[in-house]
Length: 353
Ligand code: PEP
Ligand code: MN
Image (cartoon, rainbow, N blue to C red; front, side, top):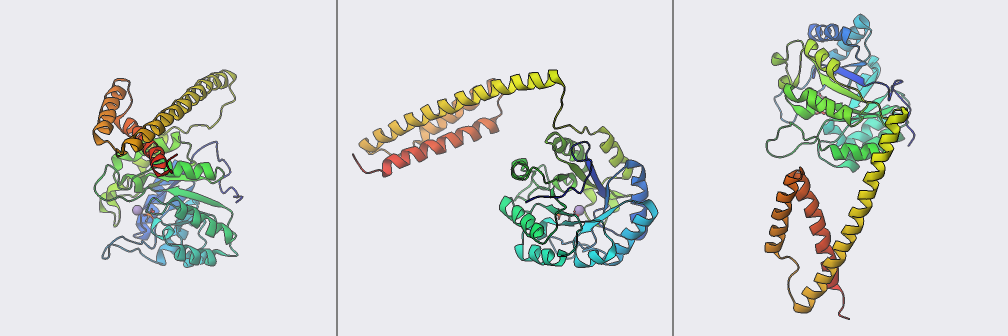
């Protein structure tokens, strides 16, 4: 896929999308937009139709909201975006986004793709609510195949069962993998829907910029506590402007010779350590295969829970002393243990010599 840029300064600065979760009244829209006027944002956002998780919540103001977006355009000169619905195409909207609850459903995405045929409006595709990168990619392919080349993606986190620090878990690795597969596709972080609360917005947005995201989407409302949807995560325009000013955009590349030399040097050391890790892993797995053969001869089960708990506990404690987190050490050991079980399993399955 070959994407067309919808953002000229990509790689030089962050792209900013801000505005209320939902269009509520024309006054609320204009007040928010005017409050954002001095913040140099690239796109003003507002949801007009809100697919809600449960019924009886505010489901959006409908078509009149599209008129209000046009009032915002006229009065402030801002470009505007909303969640895609066919009607938006007739109302001079600059950019559309596909919501997380829509990306999950290939039928809905295909309907949208069909409706977009023959237009050249830029489209931003939110991740599906479930952590399935293939669904996300499928939606990108469907919209691309309809002829839309100005595409971007929005990472808004993934839902999970139970309570968590975040409203939607970021699972950064999924977004990073998408960036790896499609480096030309701009990636925006919707920190508001990841966080669910105001106090985390700055930290999450900075993390996204540190991970080289192209931009940030934040929900802004003149009086967040009274917002008709998502009140806890919206901020006033002046709070938004403070966050935006404090965030640091990082360049992917610097041509400073000294920087390049020390980066090169550090990367060289990392590559050497990675080589060592790989050969150590290979040796470890060969030992596991030997143990597998021994267990097979003596008819002993592969899994020895006592031994496994001992390895886990000993190394978590050791890792801790060396500044390695429990999550990292246990994740790494579990992957190693699984590979070792797989090796032993192969030996057990093999025919006796
Ligand atoms: C939104 O951006 O207001 C929205 C409904 O988001 P999502 O589709 O990510 O839940
Ligand atoms: Mn919202």
